[in-house]
Amino acid sequence: MAFLTRSRERIGLAAILLVAVAVRVPGLGLPLIEWHGWRQTQTAFTALWLRDHPFDLFHAQLPIFGPPFEAPMELPLFQWLGALVMHLGVEPDTAMRVTGLATFILTAVLLWVLLRRYAGSAAAFVALAAFLFVPINLLFGKGSLPEYLATAGALGWLLAGLRWREAGRGRWYAIAFIAGTVGMLAKPTTPLFWTVPLVLAPAGTGGAGVASWLRQRLDPRLIALVLAPVAIAYAWTTYADGVKSGQIAAAFLASTSDFSRHFYYSDLKERTDPAIWARIDDWVRDLVIGAGLLPFAVLGVWAAVRSERRLLWIGATLAALLAIALFFGGYFKHDYYWTAVTPEAAILVGLGASWLWHRSRGWPLRTGVALTLVLASLVTLQHGEEEWRRAYPPLDDFEGVLARAHELATLTRSDDLVVVLGRGFDPDLLYYARRRGAMITIENAGPPLYRSLAAGPYRAFFSWDPAHDAIDIVRWWPWDGLVGPHTYAIGASPGDLRGARVTATDDGGAYDLRSRDARPLTTEALRVPCDLVSHAVPAGRAGTWLRLRPDPFARVWLTPLLAPQAVRTVVTVDPAIYAGQEQIALYCDGAPEIVVDGLLDAPPP
Image (cartoon, rainbow, N blue to C red; front, top):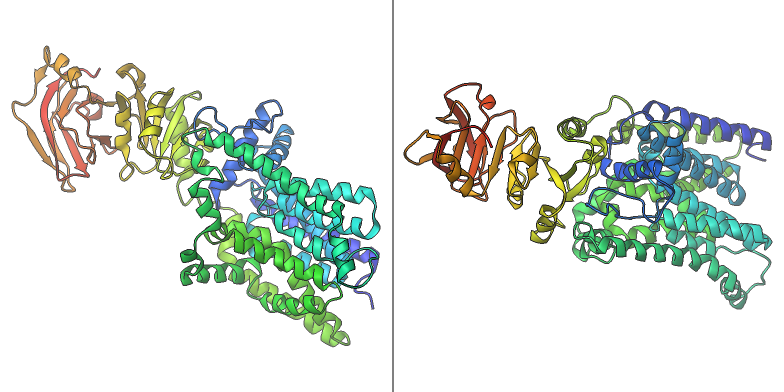
């Protein structure tokens, strides 16, 4: 007995897709920082550039590592699609979410077609629902991520490739080739292993026996269909690595770097760490398959082995397992990586549910199966609630990204280049401030980068957490100044420090020159202990110049309204800071004490 008639299948497919879109609409207007904002804004930043510049995928910019502002990751096909949506007048964040949702729905449709053709209608609908509403896909199914363009490409590669192997028609071969190439260029770590079910699955009218089996799979056309998209993606990766390797700030992101190798492939210590496996277990159980649906997935493994299409479904299962095994580092570090294997997880759930459905005789038993699936889905949603609720308003800007971005945008000019410290290579700050710059990370930090930045056209320095970041890096510029709670001005002279109320330099000659006609405020050195309380030092009416003994670890606060200042040889304070008072309340940390060797009453430079 058929699960549904063809017409009801179409109605059911349209209905479930409509619900899937509807439940994601409330979050389409959220900023891209609900979770993994670094990856979402990285994608959106390049899309913004593509919106405003002539079509050029080979030189699309990600302006976070300084000129030439190119740090290519995947070929920016997804970003280009997002830019097309922006051209329709859609706000950038929403445009990227709409693009992500469209590729997610495309993946869902292709998954349904695959299961409908090779496992039946019951398996197709259960797998479709599992894929659409599993917690991790509820969260990321409208994200600014190329993940689902890659999964759509992978499924298109497999589905069209199977059709070609069965019918031998050239159009299916061409579709499979294009889909595989798009998927591999969108994110090669996802579609690569979908070649396993494509090769393993029997197709066509070949005879029985090992020789026939090998002959089918050694077909040069099949080999080309598998290897050519991989080779194209490898060529792009080689090009992208060359671009990144030529830049001091971005070289660590090249796939050949030690950082990238360890990030993706991990090491034996991590692969055998029980804590890491416990995290993976939590993610798989609660987010990827679902706590309630896990028994159906386990049953699906049995159903796959017993299926007439066992090699196809075993191959699909291997596609997930091999991806996790090879790129273990990415999978245990970032939960969004698991979106890549949600189609395989949904396949197992669908196969398990279908196996149970078809072996349940009579409507009472089938009603029980259906109710069990509904209950299992509710349990799955309940267990993953903390994750998927992030996808809905109100936005939890738990890192304070938008406030910091507003500060940076307010205190700098639109054409200022900004050095960013303490945010790794997370572009969210620069993206929402709509600024270009260079990010100092643990991986690229060091004198070669600092020297390069100091020789460049940078005029602003932003510290994500100036109370703890290594703000002494500002010493590489002749002058720096405080303009906000996290924002510094940097330059070659005091004239470069627009709006700075506190300025500093290591040029002691500037203090000596000013002391010729300025009134001294003290005749002996002042020792200020860094003991978690503020201490008063004399202040001048026209302004205050402090001569300090430099300390690479110390920082001093001259007002709670501005960032701390690295302790440099000369620090000047505008009288507006202390509002005409005769003393400055000075607070320091990072050292046992700071020493003030001299104080002058003189206007700021």
